[in-house]
Amino acid sequence: DGGITQSPKYLFRKEGQNVTLSCEQNLNHDAMYWYRQDPGQGLRLIYYSQIVNDFQKGDIAEGYSVSREKKESFPLTVTSAQKNPTAFYLCASMASGTRGFSGANVLTFGAGSRLTVL
Amino acid sequence: DAKTTQPNSMESNEEEPVHLPCNHSTISGTDYIHWYRQLPSQGPEYVIHGLTSNVNNRMASLAIAEDRKSSTLILHRATLRDAAVYYCILRPANTGNQFYFGTGTSLTVIP
Image (tube, rainbow over all chains, first blue to last red; front, side, top):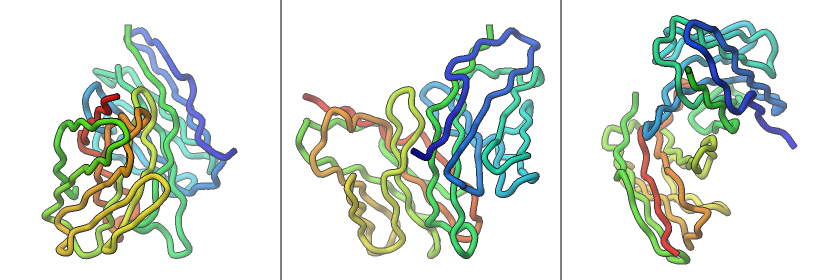
C-alpha cells in the first residue's frame, strides 16, 4: 500500500544535539511538507517542497533544516538552534494535478514523530 | 492566511448525526473548503473538500452555504471512532501549497 512513513516514532534528544527525522513516501507525490504540533494546538508549517532540490520556509523555519534530494524523501533536521524542540512532528505529501497544484489537491499525512528534549 | 472559525469542542451521542460548523466570512471566490480530522496521537486524515456545491463521500457530507461564508461537516451516524479533532481549512486555488490548520473542533462521542 502507498503511504508516508515517518521514523522514528519516538525520539529523545539531549540539549545541544541535532536530530534528523525521516519522511519517506511511495505515493509519487510532488510536494512534501513538515508541520509541528504542540499540545492542544493546531499544526504550524515548518518547511515545504514542491519539487526535488527546492524547498521553501514556512511560518516557523528557524532552528530547522531540510533537504529534498529525492522525490520520495524529505528529511527534517532539528538543530540545536531550535530553542523549544519538544513537539509532535508531522510529514505530509500532496500530488499535483495535470495543471500543477490547485485548491482541490489534498494532503496525505504520516503517523508523526514525537521528539522530546531531555 | 485564510481564516476559519470553529467551536473548540462539541459532543454527540453515538449513532446520532453530528453537524460540525465552520465560519469563513473572508473566503474568496476561488478558495476550496477542506476538512481533515486527527485522531489522538495520529496524523490528520483527509475527510472531504468542496468549492461551491454540497459534497458527499463515504466518510461524511459537506454542506456549503449559498454565500460560501460558512460550511458544515455532517457525520451521519457518529461512532466512537469518530472522536477526533476536526479541522476546517480554506485552501486558495492559486497558491498551491499552503494549508493553514487552526485548533479545530474536538468532537467527543458519548456511548
